[in-house]
Length: 242
Image 1 (cartoon, rainbow, N blue to C red):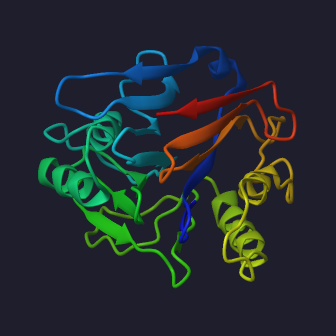
Image 2 (cartoon, helix red, strand yellow):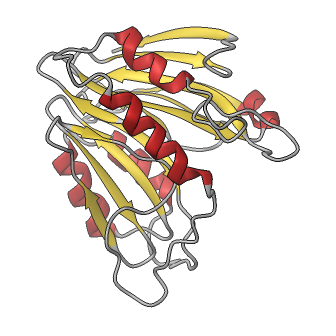
């Protein structure tokens, strides 16, 4: 989710995957000459994932499954690294669309003034723009138009539709708030409706993946709180700041 308010630029998500993968999660701080400093949480060996930089640009990542790969284009995690080396959402979108992406996914981009969902397949891009309250809500299925006979979303996680509806309802309860608090944003990712296929996911025989971390960032202050484990069963809370 991304949400622009007068005081904050929120980015937040739960990252779900196989529980055994949690031991491979690392936090990296990357300093490069003539590029913004990056703070991100990623899997060991993956050069770009979920985080923010010293220019106030942040990234979230959602898996999408559309059949097909174009090996002449850029892999998604290279795209995430490129975005995290950018100076603004506009700069990131321009570069990603110029290079093209090899396969399908969604990157929710934010900077200190706005947020934008960038959907892509092996041959198409679509922009998911904020609603009238400055919010972008996203799960694991395509929302934009992607012309082409092969650009069909498999909706590989059927509960993606339910999770998006639930998040929309919960965010809607904050409509009266001009400035939601950090706690109110964080609680959005603790929802267990439709367990085990919930926003706050749990691994069972029915659902092999689980929420391995939850992150909330404020790109205006360049701060984040990373909660390791399910956000209702926090194993460690880590404050990140640039």
